[in-house]
Image (cartoon, rainbow, N blue to C red; front, side):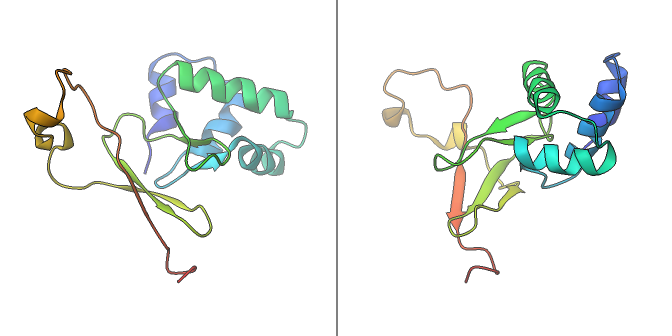
Length: 136
């Protein structure tokens, strides 16, 4: 389970009703919602929340480093609350479902020196692609 709400409380983030609802919608494992999906779910809890508030709050959460913006295949950006746990993503090529995965090994260390081309490599983002059980 994501600890997004707890992290936001610890940093003293002003928890308005709109921000709380958005954080609650994002909280959890394997949550990778688009801004529109966040808005739809948030309006179920707080009907008066505006789309602009959702977009602004998501932008603020990304700026704070509390949520990761994930882009896959030119589709809508998705928002991942698991910003403080190292992981990669597994994306369904059919329906676009995104799951967090935790492969073993260190992709930075596994890159051979001759493939670094003089770069000092500090991180790696790997996206695994395939078809989920619903699309096969």
